[in-house]
Amino acid sequence: MLKYLFGRRSSYLNTETIDKVQSLCRSIEDEIDRSNLHREIVQLFDRLLKSHSNKSPRSILQEHMNFSINKGLSQTHSQGVFLDYGQINKAGQLVAIYPGTIYRRHIDPLLLPSIRNRFLLARKDALIIDGRDRGLSRSIYLSCHARYPSYDKTWLSQDVFLHKNPLTLGHYINHFPSDGLPNVTYHEFDFNFNDNAYDLYRFVPNVRYTDTDMGDNDKGMPSVVLISLRPIKQGEELFSCYLNIIQGNEKS
Image (cartoon, one colour):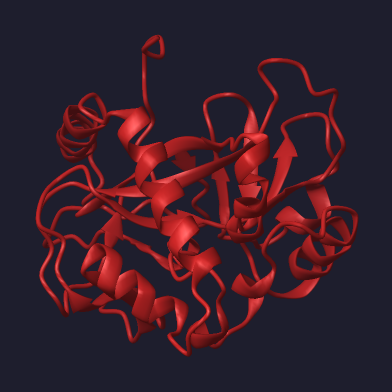
């Protein structure tokens, strides 16, 4: 996983620091049970879908998973993401989803939307997610969404209380500061629901730039989720590592 960085690399990002962080991230990622993660997402989306009360999506998240996230003034940038309710009790817990348009590297035309874009996230399978919610990136997402209206576009709103999916703030999580370590890590995940649960796609905040042939390996919607690396208390800012490149072969 690699989030593109622009400008100079900070002096504290030496090889020793990067190796330490990557080792921490891999140790948690290796323990993730993808079946349980899928089940957890299905249960949350199902709760959101079946809610006919006046409860907001954030309130449903708070009741179901005992936490919620929101944007606020970051200690490293103008905006960041914070745990504004409850707590994350352990490492390996779902915390956020990275929204945006899915591009195929070297195939789809990404040059223009990539200019001065700090919201590009690369997966190991040559897919890139553009999570910028403004400018050309926003227009492209809305254009793609017109072809795939079953997916979520409410994450584009600057008002998080209008988000249909309360986890779609992964694109605003900042790189960890020099005096700390990340508390979340990126994890590749494909949303893939069966026909009986097709309505759950309305909470998926991603669209493909281009139609693809739906082979066995292309079903569903590729995405990225953020997973906790340790317990996180209410009020803490969430930090990831933009240089967490997974090396070696992917686990089967």
